[in-house]
Amino acid sequence: MSFFGSLFSPNKKNESVVLVEVGADSVAGAYVAYAEGELPILLYTRRLTVETREGEPRDKSMLRALKILADTLLREGAPVLSRATGSGASDAVLLSINAPWQKSSVRTERFVDEDDKEFSFTKSAVSDLLKKTEIKLPRYMRVDETVIGTILNGYKTQDPYGKKAHRASIIVLTSFVNEHITKNALSTLQGVFHTKNVRPLAGSALRFQTILRAFPHERDALILDATGALTSIAFVHRGLFIAITEVSDTDKQREWMEHVGVQLAELAKHYPLPRTIFLLAQESDMASFRKKLDAGDLGKFWLSDNPPKIVPVLPSHLLRFVRVAAAAAPDLPLLLMTLFHGGQTSEES
Image 1 (cartoon, rainbow, N blue to C red):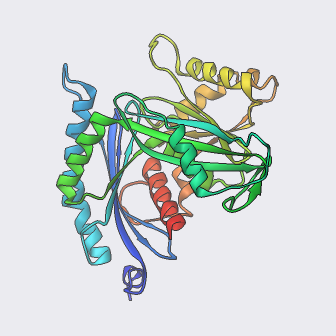
Image 2 (image 1 turned 90 degrees about the vertical axis):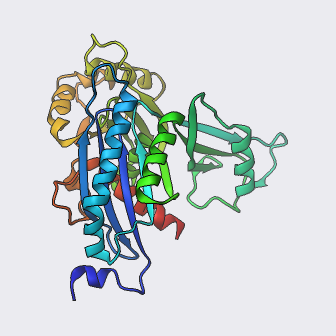
């Protein structure tokens, strides 16, 4: 029996998913097959450069490239999926939207009992609090709001619901995507793949969450995401997100490292900085970003002569979680999307 024949047997819960990533400089897509109890298989990948015509807005260029990508995925990728699983149809499409069309934020919300009495921590109480503290952004749509940490009586708690507490707080990760871009991207993907099951997400939030899953023992770290047009930084303390900040690109005269330094200095005013930095970038750009960080005198932000440890995240770090059958070289953002969807599926089942 072939490998795929044994993997996609009728008694397993199987799912075929199209992954699509859009950004200002490139768009990418993949077909991934998931089977219960097995590593996901990355069957086909494709990345296209966004070609901008003279005088053309960036969003129009990207949407044109997205249509070309979607048609290519259907024409070239669906037959690969069919040969592997017996069907070329996908069950869902996961759409990751990158800067400058996405925003993510982290906030802490606290439960206050005026009488300081013990109370039961419930899902309904969390839902009510999130409704009261809902964040809205003009021209953006909220696509995800996740409680990524719960602290009861001063301690992080994994299974908090139903437990008693005098004090409680939740850490909430909220993601927004540009409404105009998202509606146009959804229309394109729904038309090509003939499905309404297209889930949009903010790219940086997706990658930040997946890095925590891929490196669970690194509980204190900075995640420097330079995969797209803008760079963002996530601050992780004791396994919890504390802050997410975006590196400005408005002043073109300043160097990238200077922008990063401004944000690190701002974070250092409020928190002691962790000594591990995960660097996310396209593999072709990784050496350049690493060189800039090495030359950036990072020790001054830690008030130390010893610079922090920089960990360039490479596709090879993630291959223990994914089986790659695609002919193209592993693509880091698509690998992270593969792991993210697999993690979501595991948590729901």
